[in-house]
Amino acid sequence: MKSVFIIIAFAFIPFITFAQQEAAPAIGCIDKDIVLRIDDVKHGFIEKGMKVFKDAMVSMESETPYSIEVKLEKGHLYQLLYMGSEISSKSSIELFDGDDKSVMKKEIKRGEEPGYITFDYTPTKTDIYLIVLQQKQKHASMCGSFSILERTQSKN
Image (tube, rainbow, N blue to C red):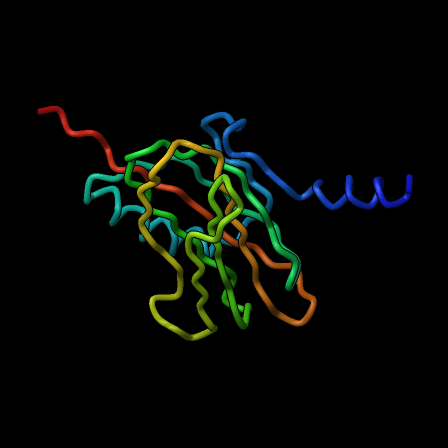
């Protein structure tokens, strides 16, 4: 029984909680190509009235889910943006609500345009949401970029 508990405890080590991070992103890896491409995409959203809410580069192992917990506020418009490595044959993202129900799942295969996954989401309740990222490429270690942008509130 002790060994099962230890295995379960180590299984949660890769989890990061954006809600506990400071303003600076957690850098788990650096891929200059991803940084250049994703910064351009984020800039386009910023020009449309979004601001970066959370942002991180993450180190990922092939076919190993990378889970992120984040508190999202009811009624706020969020844009989730995920870009995997160019060597990855497939990248996917799945969003779960606080009741562990899958809210959305998207994937992209190598060579598909635009080369990243994005979707907007407006929570119906304030809760801790779980985001699961995954990449696939023959047991390789890869870098990925994940960002959450939020619609800035207009002053009327």
